Picture 1 (cartoon, helix red, strand yellow):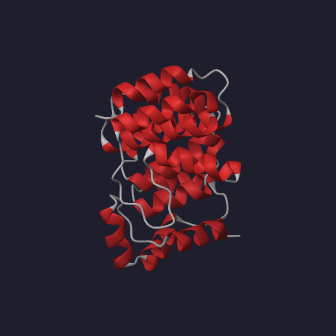
Picture 2 (cartoon, helix red, strand yellow; picture 1 turned 30 degrees about the horizontal axis):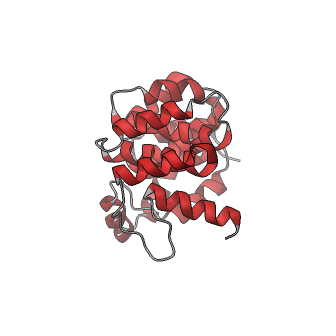
Picture 3 (cartoon, rainbow, N blue to C red; picture 1 turned 90 degrees about the horizontal axis):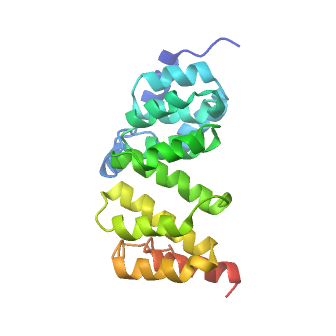
Length: 223
């Protein structure tokens, strides 16, 4: 099979561009106009191609970077590469996919979690908290959950939006997954009131931590 070129992929992405999708995405801080279902279909056709993924990432184009994250080999990136990629991923969707689809599968995830959580850049720190939330849910051994709750209690209320959102997710996950910490997680959520008034569509779970915790516990217990 002939090698797919960056130019060919960029032309295909340009053909998928939809002004209405771009308008919606830009309201959320993203800079592309490609329907994500069509983007995933393109990725499925291209299959895994690490070299192409790296070249697409280098274009800096939002849609190309999302596609790169779908066709790359997560374990092929070095620690410093991932750190540089995250610091260059300033739009929410690219940042989110990079953390969830690539960094979480990397052998460098724990080292990056520790470094990023302590980073003075709140967007970088939010990635560290996202990785911490993953550990709270799947590999909590070795985590000091009380210390995490201390930080959330002290810092979440005044944190910038994306860092606040990531801390809030961690707070909710601690409350959902760890019954021995649930009462304190609920109390912190109630007292801080973060995202209490967040507009939530009917049938969706509120991101307000106490509501989120109680709803997920109710579902798990089959109430």
